[in-house]
Amino acid sequence: MPAQPLELILGRQFVDTLSLPAFLVDPEGNLLFYNEPAEVIFGLNFGETGGMRVEEWSTMFTPYDDQGNPLPPEKLPLVKTLQDLKPNSGSFYIHSLTGKEIHIEVTSFPIIARQDRFLGAMAIFWKIDP
Image (tube, rainbow, N blue to C red; front, side, top):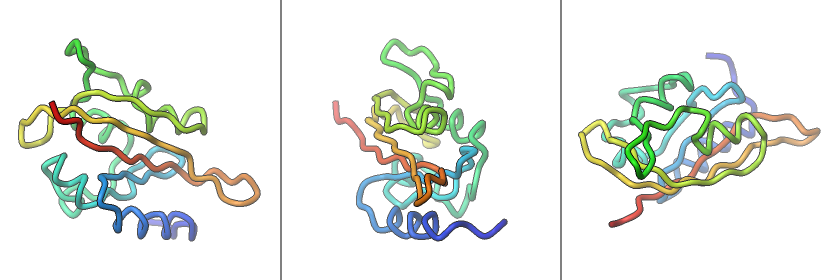
C-alpha cells in the first residue's frame, strides 16, 4: 500500500480516538479505516475487513431507505461527498453483518489539504434509537 499523505495519517488517528463511529476514505472512495465504535454497529472489526473499494463497503451493509428500497452507492452521503467535494448528510437503514436492522444518521465531509488538494473524506455516524 502506498504511503498516505500526512493529513490522512492524522485523520486515521483522529477517527481512532472518536467515541462516535467513523469512516475514512481516500479520493477514490477506498476505505482506509473505520473505528471501534463503527465495528460495533457493523458487526465486523477493521482487522477482519481491512481496506475495501467503494463498491464493496457501500453495498456490504445493505443500505436502504425507510420504505425498504435499496440505496445505490451514489445516494450515500459519503459517496456524494466524494463526488461533489461538499459536506453531506442523511439517514437510512443498514443490515449489520450480525443481521440487525440499524437506523443511522450520517454526516460526511471532504478532507482538503492546503493548496486545495483533495485527499479523501470522512463520515461520522450514529445509531438512531427507535
